Amino acid sequence: MRYVGQELPESAVPAGRIRAAGVERRFGRGASHIHALGPLDLDIEAGEFCCIVGPSGCGKSTFLRIVAGLVKPSAGRVEVTAATRNPAAMVFQNYGISPWKTVLANVRFGLDLRRVPRKEADARAHEWLVRLGLADFADRYPAALSGGMQQRVSIARALAVEPEILLMDEPFAALDAQLRTILQDELLEICQADKRTVLFVTHSLEEALVLGDRVLVMSARPGRLIAERVPPFARPRTGEVRRSPEFAAMQAELWELLRGEVEQASAQEQEQDHRQGHKQEQEKKKEEVAS
Ligand SMILES: Nc1ncnc2c1ncn2[C@@H]1O[C@H](COP(=O)(O)OP(=O)(O)O)[C@@H](O)[C@H]1O
Ligand SMILES: [Mg+2]
Image (cartoon, rainbow, N blue to C red; front, side, top):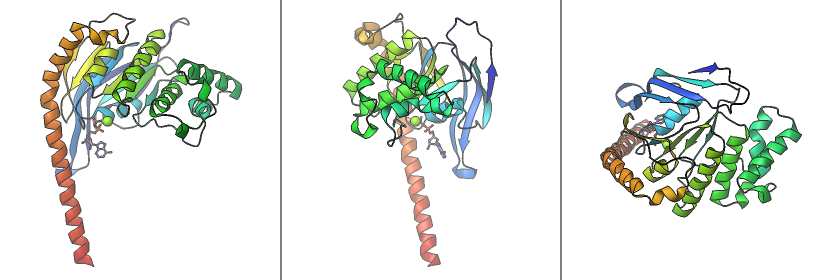
């Protein structure tokens, strides 16, 4: 993991770049270790919106965490090139916001961490509240908000620090289908307004095709890249692309590739449950013998 500073002309909106080479991750040791990810090679250009689709358990979150510097790869390396001191911010599926803070304080969180003066931090946070339709909720607590609103808070919080790279881990997976569509459309608008680099992980092909400049498909564990498509929809685009014939065709084509991986991942999950069950049983027996 290496962050490389880079000089950019004053006028350019800074956007980070990601280079991953031979990235692998294993968890645990010995016979029961899990080869979660890789090897994976991936270059994401500045300003690109890159979507990764893969079955559950294939290492998507692990890869995002490696890019964020939260997890070390077991092999290979990731290089993030950023011009500013705000390389990456992350948005999670379960919102990741603090229930004891108001909406405004949640959005200001990253700015407070960076010791941005309160007045400026409030102004910047407020700007993002407005952009996400949250202005009327500034003084509320998250518990009073719907799931969709909470996820908007989480997105506003990530964007308030003006990160060069936005890392999104299935951010809409907990929302119902209609709300998901609305938030996808909002994200399209936000990300087309200022071009930052986005790495967006999802298990929904539809979501990936609506949002992405590029869609990458991952295999079942250990997750590797098995396909890459460029949705043929010009920018700025809207959710209208969902209704185009090319959209349906590409979704069907990618599903053919993904289907087998999903089946394999589901079998792996069953086996993992079985192994865990077996281990628990053994531990119980040991306890019984000991008592
Ligand atoms: N900290 C960890 N310790 C042990 N196993 C882990 C850990 N994190 C993830 N795994 C395992 O690695 C695999 C990939 O996990 P993850 O990256 O969360 O997959 P995804 O996000 O694609 O669903 C899974 O089998 C998961 O159980
Ligand atoms: Mg995940």
